Amino acid sequence: MTTSLAGANRGIADNILDLIGDTPLLRLPPSFAPGVEAEILLKFEPANPGGSVKDRIALAMIRGAEERGELRPGGTVVECTSGNTGAGLCLVAAALGYRSLIVIPDKMSQEKIDTLRAFGAEVVITPAHVPAGHPEHYLKVAERLAASIPGAWWANQFGNPDNPGAHYRTTGPEIWAQCDGRLDAFVAGCGTGGTITGTGRFLRERNPAVRIVGVDPPGSVYEPYWRTGELPAAGTYAVEGVGEDEIPDSWDREVVTDYEVVDDAESFAVARRLARETGIFVGGSAGLALAAGLRVGARLGAGKRVVVLIPDSGKNYLTKVYDPDWLRDNGFLDRVPAAAATVGDLVRRRPRAALLPEETLDLAWRQIADRGVRPLPVVAARPDGELLGVADEDRLLELLAAGSSPQDSISSARRR
Ligand SMILES: Cc1ncc(COP(=O)(O)O)c(C=O)c1O
Image (cartoon, rainbow, N blue to C red; front, side, top):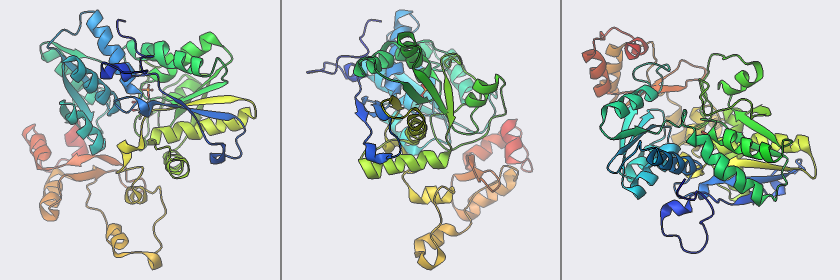
């Protein structure tokens, strides 16, 4: 490793990359959780220049690829990511003069996509609800593009040892030093699992008694697999950045000593309350990790210290976690009672313009034309009404051109 990943945040920095890592550790005001006697410390990753914990692995993976000769001047960095790793990679690529191409599923927030484009990245959008292994799955698309573009290198955060390696070399040592070696638990949500694996490995090497607590939304496979050793069917959840439907190489079951499950409603409620009551503005996955951290702190009790990793800022989620209409539409906030409703509330209550996956391409086409709304969301049947993807004329024409019939259902056409 030629570039120090941490420790350069003092005085005048010469390069934006020198601002990556060395993030603050912030004490949670005890008034936020009066019943929790343990000290709760937040490892505050929104302080990274790209706004998330993923800047660390972006820098480590690109430096690793350069050192192995896999990425050369003029090359293209390719990755498939729900956002933060993409932003980190595009930032590092821009700073070092590489092109970047990011493949992202269509359920991701517009802010995240716009952030990638701000760094000059090319963004390829793929359907969110195709199964792993499908040729249109974002992993497959990234792999194909990396293989076909000369000079391209696929970062592959789920299989790249520099992902957990970055946390082993930076996040873990920083926390250990900031705590003077005195901590009882480290709590983090798992997306790739790189954070918990690298940080947890380092901390347990220093003190095997430190609890390393993973956090999952219900529907992710990590917690059930960690508990039983068997891979369950994956479910769905709205929190972004954490949870998986497969077990990647970047997550090591042996490092994790405990697992907590926190649902979307609690994750979002904790994040929102944190912003209002303390001014600490974080994303939904930070709400998930903090909800679990409070449980761990309550169990451990007075005199103990829990470090919770805060992956990113609430700014990425203004149209979701911090939008009361989105929360209400998705069942995370109570509806306004009819007697107190404004005209806006009543208009929002009309049945939404949306398609079901079992509806035909023909109906989808007519709905788009009749309602003049494009793209139209494709949502799962109630009660959960989860967003599965989006449909517009271009996408429907692509499916028809690829051999689907107008009478095929949207879900079967997308699987072809
Ligand atoms: C917002 C957010 N939270 C948490 C994580 C989890 O980090 P890791 O992939 O290291 O498990 C990610 C990863 O993408 C993320 O974007």
